[in-house]
Image (cartoon, rainbow, N blue to C red):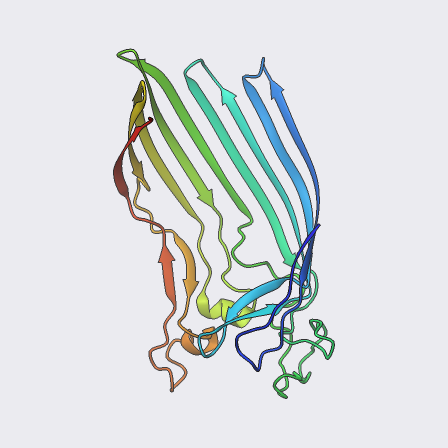
Length: 269
């Protein structure tokens, strides 16, 4: 169990945010097989996250922290490590996540500061005095940023080269599609983050106290979208020129590093 304390928003008209609380129930295992040449480790878990804090960008560009009512994350994480031969090591990791809201997110709190979860169309937001069209994110909405699946594969071959230790390695990473915002309207304006694959290659040699590695990261030069943002509130700056007073609204995307070649030298003293 754990919690984060609440606090006060920089925008004075925005109510303070409360502490959030996380309860994690987890069952894990560590096993070894084939005379310790094969290991299989993992964990399954359920996290219950109450009054969870999340940040949004307000209309004036100030970050606002708000509370939603509750979410639940069911997951499985596992790793397989196989020493296939004396020289060849293979490993794989997988992770599955089912992260969803377990109550409506209405976007405002009651007089006691608790997140409101019942807000059918026509409900009055006490902070603004305006009627809402329904929950900003209904129960069952997938949590943002977290993919449903991600995994990796690594193959490493070690050998002797002129009496020195050397290796070659290849790694492949897959990350599933992700959403960008908890709130549905803002999510649609920002757009989702597509799934991507990335491959890395490296090789190196070590002699006594020094080592040299060469590498190629992102071998196929994939432009993986890692995050999206706007310069102010998404409904204003991400509205695709539909707001007259902000004609230059634009959604920006942060991408992964392009194909990169490099050499590393290490000297131990």
